[in-house]
Amino acid sequence: MDVRTLCLGVLSFGDATGYEIKKYFEEAFSHFFVAGFGSIYPALAELADEGLVRVRNQTGGRRPGAKVYQLTEAGRTAFADAILRTEPRHKVRSEFLVILYFAHMLPPERIRSVLDERLRDIDLLLAALDRRDAEAGTDRSPGIEFVAGFGRSLLEAARTYIDDHRHELDTASGVEGDSADHLAPAANAGA
Amino acid sequence: MDVRTLCLGVLSFGDATGYEIKKYFEEAFSHFFVAGFGSIYPALAELADEGLVRVRNQTGGRRPGAKVYQLTEAGRTAFADAILRTEPRHKVRSEFLVILYFAHMLPPERIRSVLDERLRDIDLLLAALDRRDAEAGTDRSPGIEFVAGFGRSLLEAARTYIDDHRHELDTASGVEGDSADHLAPAANAGA
DNA sequence: ACTCACATGTAAAGAGTTACATGATTTT
DNA sequence: AAAATCATGTAACTCTTTACATGTGAGT
Image (cartoon, rainbow over all chains, first blue to last red; front, side, top):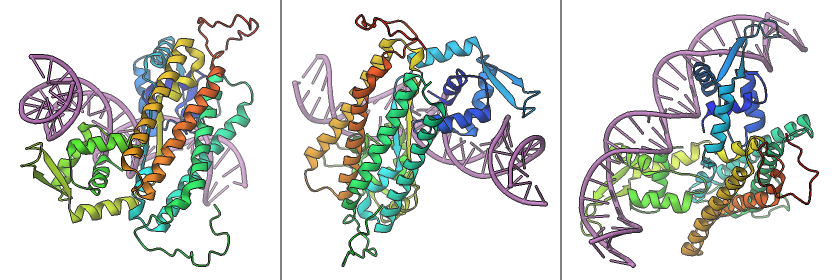
């Protein structure tokens, strides 16, 4: 499944500009699908060529000149078809885990910063999920709720795992660091 | 980080043929990094051109003619550099979740098969982790243990979430199925 | 005046997937 | 003898990423 198809999906909830579609990706899909302007705008142009979406130039609204996209019947059918036929893959590509796999080649401060950066990203993704929870309230479909809950569960599992196991990497390093573990003044492992 | 870099990482554990490297990817990295022959073989050719690996043709072994790759000093340095500098991203691209996000457009049997297929894949990934656990025993580095444990935690969290919440998708369908909800005849609220 | 958010696009480069194409060796 | 595994590679295609390039409207 490509960005084109998912744009059709976003438009099934209502008309939108390319910019708004990008915002939707960021807010709703960020934990399982990313797309930038560089793939969204060309995708919309192709969809318009193929008659799967219709474009009109906003005249009166707050942003005159903006292109508002609308799903056509053909587009709706194409999308319904895509979600029926697409293989339900779930692919992870994690440089984060590659780096930690080779923790024995890294200095402790690199391990620390890699873990902390990941925790920060996890919290950003969780914050996006909470924001949508608060905005949409109770009127979301079970599918949307399921996907949000799935994301939250996995993100929290990741955070918990990192917090619980990061200490195991303390002895992993092949490079000397400022370990400061001689007196260990009670609580220096606070994340 | 690309396949080239990770090939260097695999070779840091010892010499290997392209085929063996692919096997290593499948067994050890399957839950966070995938690569096929179509990317591994060209990658190895490039690395050889750049002097980051050395190639020799196996003469005496069980597979005469096989190309055995060996990391050079330059290759070792390049890899060490890569894991120091690469951004620790963790990217998910999930058609699985996209499909379920639009569960309101799907017939119940599609939802069922999508979930079941995912559970099957999760179990395959967990089986690969268990296999490596059994093979390698206790002599693995903390980094490798951490990554394996991380994968196991997330995969189990995913399986648990699916098992615990799949029933919530029963009423999600916009298409009639053999719902078998005869005991709850007051709950057919279509989206 | 300045900055942030809105808004749209293109071009080149980078990377991976899929299908094609072939052949030897080992195990059943 | 057949099937599975070992073994290597290419070519075309698809797709995304990154950087570049530009301009308006709203709020401070």
